[in-house]
Length: 379
Image 1 (cartoon, rainbow, N blue to C red):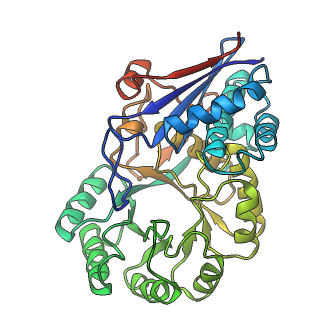
Image 2: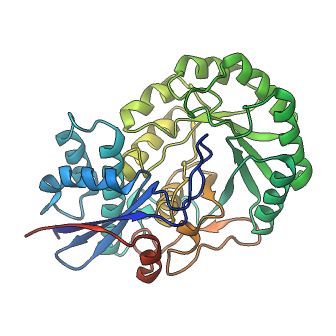
């Protein structure tokens, strides 16, 4: 079974604001889907956490290497692309594109084998998992309203992130967290994401340590990205002294970048994003290393229905997985698939058991959010 075509679908029209200072408009393109097709008619879906323009350029670079390759050897093919684009890739948009291709190839292999990807990744440790609703911080009254809506949607865990937390004062930060806890009560888990990967993040280890102590008073499950993403020494110091678990590393790509963070236990929870770090292939390698070092893995997933489906398959195959991130509300998750994701009355998501990723994209709905695609095909 050979690869004969790749189509790139930039998503626009329903982009969720990511919390950056400049904000994001619905028409911005932050996410891109890719579809890989084979000479036997089987196709697979992948997702990239980067713009369509960058994915198109990267696929143009990779296509001479990719066309005609086996469609049922995702690990070998993605590693070949990575090794062969070393000087132009080694992270960034090229690795993001490889991520989407890799996910699509796992989807194809699952369909060809008539097995869910989770089984091909090693086996199913669970059939359901807890999603946490991923939202942005806001002014106290607006935050409370968003939290109420998120709980009403069935979430029993919620992560609040980015602005205005950490941007005004310690007193205001505590007001936000106190408001959140009072709004949802003690039965809903709360996580806090400072968003330390924002440009020119002003805070260091002392701020993060003191903030972690405040968060512990409100039973916060973890404290995410409290420092800039390259400050490994600061993370090591913070993780050893924080009263709440520290998480991070969503921006890293390639397993080699994750290795020192895991081996040095710079975080309690490591958060690979399969739509940018190299796909399910790299995520599985990262998770295996983390498991051997007793570091928890929670996939980062500020993305799409395809990204969420990949995270569900990935999490099913991790021995100690507990959560998946669920960006909400997000039309790229809630309105793209032929069958919707459903949170049950226990606040859990059932992991799809159909072949491949277990989901399919509705072509008519995709057209609403991706009017212009780019096709790369064998002549």
